[in-house]
Amino acid sequence: MLIVSAPDKLRNFLKQHYLKDQNVGFVPTMGALHDGHLELVKRCILENQISVVSIFVNPTQFHDAEDLANYPKDLKRDIKKLDSFNVDYVFTPSDNQLYPNKPLVSIDFGNLSKTMEGKFRKGHFKGVGMVLGKLFHIINPDRAYFGLKDLQQYLLIKRMCADLNFPVEIIGIDTVREPNGLAMSSRNRRLSKNGFETASALYNGLDLIKKGLKRGVVIEALLSEATHYYASINGLEIEYLEAINPGDLKTITSQKGLSELAVCVAGYVEGIRLIDNLYLQLK
Ligand code: AMP
Image 1 (cartoon, rainbow, N blue to C red):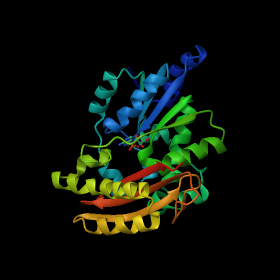
Image 2: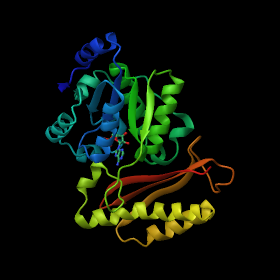
Image 3: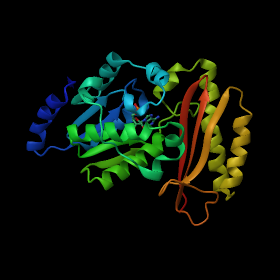
């Protein structure tokens, strides 16, 4: 496994693989790796001859300086984990290496970034689009792996690649969960034992909605039921709970006529912001 921090160096290393017609898979991460990340890494290794994992806490996608400063970092442990999976390249650029200049150009996702994560984290997707544009150009992967836990990010990046002709296949991987249902996240390690249990309510609310949908209950009623449930949990503060059509990310109040839907939730436990979602194929 090679650890590379200079973008030009990585490009040069990867050139030899393109010349040999070897396909390259890529997993972008912000480090503090957990089993959710590692699921993406496993799929990447399985489906590609060469695997690249990036570890970069991207400053431009944080609108809150405190959130950025508190983001967990554990490079030594991350590298050990990736080595045990036989990843080929770990890309660990510094802020200056990836952002030698303050970018003037930006990616605008239009209405897709005006809801949910985009609404509550101003400029977040601009930063995500910027860093992934850079990483895709440096690495030029055939496939890139994203967690469906960050559903809006997955949908936006798919759209960015289609609109801008990035020759990369975007692959979504199911959310990996803790035994109590909580979606794995690097932020979970900042939760206390109690907070960890409280946070599992996010999943329980979504599960309640899933069960209701299976019984044919209309989504609007289920959202209201879940809102009451969340309000009954001490220590959980919900930021948004929305049902959307994953095709256009528009809010829905009924599932009638839809072939798929998603319910997305964001909330705070012990001051830590957590997100989760439920994605369902209806037909
Ligand atoms: P992050 O390091 O948080 O930027 O995440 C890097 C990638 O891992 C993103 O595509 C995330 O959606 C994905 N990911 C994070 N948590 C999970 C999880 N619990 N299950 C599956 N994928 C995840």
